[in-house]
Length: 110
Image (cartoon, one colour):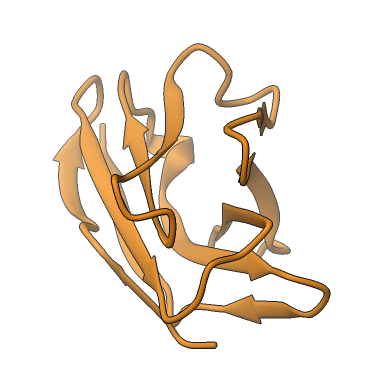
């Protein structure tokens, strides 16, 4: 399974960005993780094939994961961004095995 993520960039604190991820297959669970410089990769949020979502406490109320019309595409809408949201965001896909996208950099300036 191949994952193609896009949408990262530089944004000021308080701003918004939307990330997209398209998989080459349909998966039960897709989601986003992020890795800040010098830190371990951490969960941002996931969405099931029936639309159930789960978010890290640090992004609840600010980030929203959704599925596109094609069930192999997901989006991450990030609002009220903070400098601590800076990192490489990785799309994740699970169908019994785990796959990772190449990552897209999000930089939030203060």
